[in-house]
Image (cartoon, rainbow, N blue to C red; front, side, top):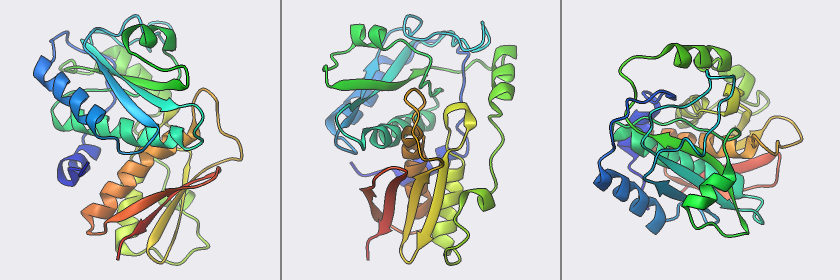
Length: 263
């Protein structure tokens, strides 16, 4: 699958997680197009997406009373990976964010939900193998015209607009960043993550940028590797927007993946 770099890179800077939707249906042809695009071509092995054209209330549950609840969405997508593959969480994060950015480019709203949903309810809607896990879901729909009180409170609780400075995220012992590396890491810095914890860390060298996770242990419910996979797509888009095409190699945790430019 050839990445639509221009439209997805622009989407990085306008994407906002939305929890309140206005009940308008999404054009069935648009949903079918999303499903077909991400079913026919897998960006990484061991990761796939299922798009469900029905309301996700049975799948989602609130975070803090009513304030974390998602309302009004007419459809949702599930992000699915092989449970036997150690690289599956990062692959799921990467392909899931691809759908998020594509939906954003189409004018639709989304919201990553990785811990507070009912996997059994998703399995009732999609054919999911016993060796597969639903890592996360997102509602899909048209956002309410204005942020609701619920949206504002949730964004404040999650500190959604705060971003760690590059000095906290980049290994200072490495050489100075090339311009393309700085652009790539800045795009990755804007990636969403569970609770906005931003668990990724970056190191760079001649012709590459490496993504790793902070801390020696991954979380079972809120996977740091999944969050790093989301950042991986942002990083690649930032690199390619700066004219550097490369390829990914998945690594052993707490290292996650290396993006190396193709000469």
